[in-house]
Length: 352
Image 1 (cartoon, rainbow, N blue to C red):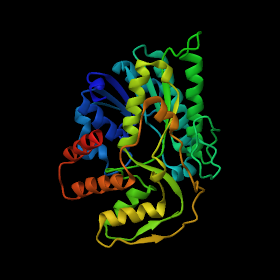
Image 2 (image 1 turned 90 degrees about the vertical axis):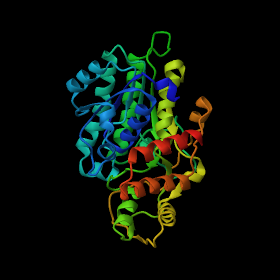
Image 3 (image 1 turned 180 degrees about the horizontal axis):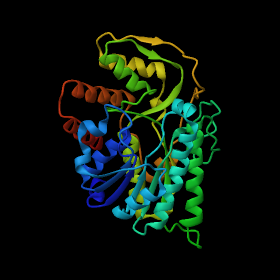
């Protein structure tokens, strides 16, 4: 896969975020010509700034809600592949700022696809959404791609809308009269990701890291909530795989769940316990519900479609994902070279 991306012109929105920065590292290492379009990093510190990846790519500071600025950036880059990661990604934040969440996640998708429609160089598009797009019935079985899109909170619902926008553009503008795609466009519905360099608020592993570095107890709001956790490299390589394969065979364009096998679906409290054991040093966990906004209690994905279409399988267990997160954090804590650490982990992932 890495050879395929050598020399390819790739446009990444949201490149200054946690997943976006990891993705840029992968693409830069593969020799791709990367143009990133995003606001300034959403956290301080940020993985994007700590690793200096901006020196290896072309970065455009811009708002996904600004259609004209986005169009100029894309026209200037003339990309072959577009990976859309820009989003307001936090559930609790979406309750506080629902208008901004919908503007970014829905109209941002409209703007992105409108720019793609008017840019003749694009040959493959992947829109990254979330596992939370489905109507959550709090059931044990994983959700499949053909089930109802009906996210509950503003974040989840805005991503459901992003899926519908993509469906409309795919049919209205990117499909020929013969029913075959003229431009393959897919959505990827990924589960919760963890990994080194995530400094976001209201995410459990960053909360664990902050507590560990300050030698404080880890506060857990919803210890019994079950989520499909995976290392950040799992979905990123899945996005790259989808973009490549549908570029070679446009019939593969569609919507795909990207998540762990059943053993990767953990209760939040159990994940924290795993982090505590991996970190060491006698960390403590305190369960302390804060009466905050509604969040789903049980969520799991059925990834049969992705496995069948591409022969994909998750490579790392959650134990390994936590170990790699702790390894990166120790590296940062001790002032070691983060780029070397990340390239080592990417190589280990590819060899696993």
